[in-house]
Image (tube, rainbow, N blue to C red; front, side, top):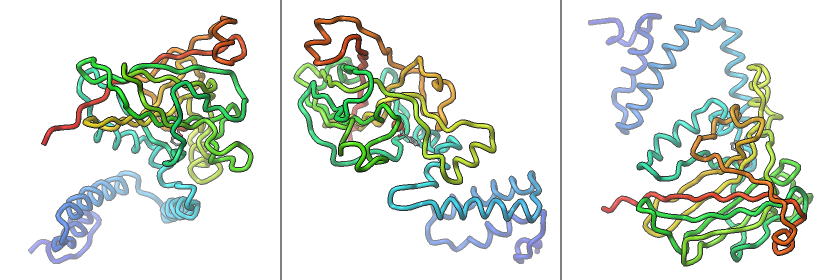
Amino acid sequence: MHDHEQGYFTEENSAEVVIGRNRNAKDARLKEVMAVIIRKLHEAVKEIEPSQQEWFEAIMFLTRTGQMCTDWRQEFILLSDVLGVSMLVDAINHRKPAGASESTVLGPFYVHDAPQLPLGSNICLDRKGEDMVISGIIRDTQGRPIPNAKLDVWQTNDDGFYDVQQKGLQPNFNLRGVFRTDEAGRYWFRAVKPRFYPIPDDGPVGQLLGKLGRHPYRPAHLHFIISADGFEPLTTHIFDPDDRYIDSDAVFGVKKSLLATFEKVDNQERARQLEFANPFWETHFDFTLTPQPTT
Ligand code: BEZ
Ligand code: FE
């Protein structure tokens, strides 16, 4: 009988011994997942050969990450975001057919109960920033417009904070709204030009980024969750392609297909109609939804 079959642990057979100990696991998926994690973790430790002190520092980092979590702050998700794991899990779970709009990270600032608003509403309630009008068409993969599709949108204010990060300072539901497309699949609303902003960086994940010589910024974007009967919901953003952080998003959320065109418009008459200052910004972005698989 080999040592590892008896359950004796050596440096060489470490992973096999631990995986073998889980042989009676009741949940087959858990058993499989833990076998992969144990194998890769032992492989990493063997390659790194940490000192006892380094291993303790790693444990203390994870401890601080857990201690930072509250009902409002999920430091482990942030860790997954900056390591690119959130985007990888998203990619694996949202493989799209050709022509369909791509997804990206949800982020921690979505709220479920934003107000339903008529098309054209201005979601900027604090009146800060450069006015911007956003419009587009929601279609299926055959190019047919989807009427009554629901768009849940949110973005930061001109200081780079979401309303939920500045409760009491910003009006509730500032720069959030839920819209429905018209009979031709069109949507439009008014807001402000988004700005780049840092992900929450006052905790262990921010310290890690600093030590790795990385900045915590996300390029300017607007968030969308788009849904319609018979289609897969789409969680995505549109990005300002001219943003200084467009090629170095702290959470790897940028995709080429999600780059919009932010155009500066100098038109007194249109500005007056939109109740905007002149000049203002305009972006047009169409989305294509994936049909839900038929069962
Ligand atoms: C966001 O875009 O809101 C976001 C995404 C990931 C981490 C932090 C913020
Ligand atoms: Fe965001």
